Image 1 (cartoon, protein in one colour):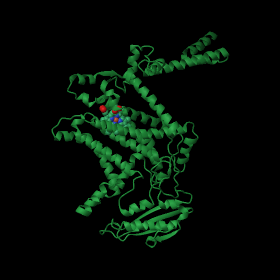
Image 2 (cartoon, helix red, strand yellow):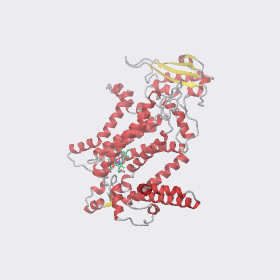
Image 3 (cartoon, rainbow, N blue to C red):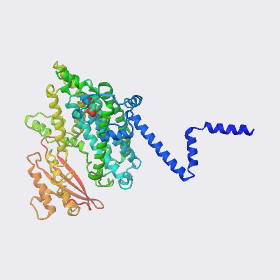
Image 4 (cartoon, rainbow, N blue to C red):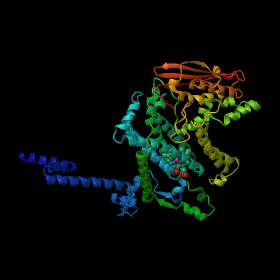
Length: 561
Ligand code: HEM
């Protein structure tokens, strides 16, 4: 009986998994000092071995010491066995090709812009996920919780700044990637669908950057509160989710279906030897892989250095929901849209056509819907359709497709034109550039501008318009008919009124016939004055507008001088 019991126990002991047995015996060892040293040593060994094995699994059999040697530029210390190479290649080659065409991997061909797009997208996902633990998407708590991330969470400021810098770099790099793909003709068949997916990725990137810029609920996000939760879900769920799916599709096509394009000059070279050499293969592992590790190390270093020493995400005051509406400040990469709303080029030309030649196209063009929505959508459709239009054009002229610049003069010219369009309208979209448009709008913009125009030189104060400069205290409540303030005055307020009146009179010939102006200053809320400039005139034709009004709010404590 006793023996049977003993046997049962010893069998139970044997049946325990080895790991548990070791753990139990290690617990026993912890009782003595020697034992504790032994356990610490064994634990260190085990962790090191596990890390080394993990690295070998990912790197064609190179261990930690080899990777360090490779990054130093030394040859690896051991040579991986064939079996290790096969196994680890199987891991990597699930998503990276085993070999690349030599000339497609030249830095000067792709500038690694696709690679860095992926890199910055990953930085966004990692830093963004970390911030999701602390950010609270409610209008009342969003600003505060962002401050908490910056001020109290360990490394919060670094993560917040890295997210901001990397978001801006992502937009920049994706834009440059698009330009490189277009200029090298890499969007042509068989890469047409890859281009289309790329444009969708561009739209997602811009959408993510925009939705992210309003989440801290600063003053410019004053319109946001009812939609904050929706915008948050877009920014943290829907857009990145769609982005991951599309990046997978984009990258699957690039790595599996058609590969990276060869430089056009080599691909289409008349010299057979040049063409053959361009197609020679290089191994991804370890050569290209080591190069990419180096890029990642450098990019991370630069990002952390920028976030630590150079660039902090700008932080405005919280959105004050009860008053002080201000126009939505828009991110730099959408300035060109605002520039189109101020359009000083096409609209004046159309107005000239209407007034001098009598063809009225301006009625279709001069609207916010047209310039703010319809034109950008047309622009996006044009980009989506570019490879197909390009192929159609070649077919129309009976030409075979070529990626060489000298065979695509029109295409390159159109690309450069589009680029210039975006650059010029981006500049026009900045507050530096005064809105032209109708004279009443221009006069209002001069005295009560939407934004403060930055000073031409650093350290000088920004120009926020004369009404703001006079400020809360200098604006007596009342309704003032500017016609009664024709002469300049030594006092500031009447002098302002006479200056506006002079501008209105000067603009009589430019469309303000019989122009009259009124400045209305009201006590709006405690410590807040509402100032409205109202200009009326006699329209040139029936049905045209005959009045314009612009309002700004001034707080007692605001100082613009
Ligand atoms: C988040 C955005 C994007 C990511 C992560 C991404 C990623 C990549 C990567 C890694 C490559 C491999 C070659 C290279 O580095 O150039 C590539 C190639 C390509 N991408 Fe993108 N891309 C993005 C956006 C775009 C955009 C906006 C376009 C243009 C509409 C585009 C069109 C293409 C095309 C046509 C190729 C093939 C190029 C060739 O074979 O030379 N991609 N992309």
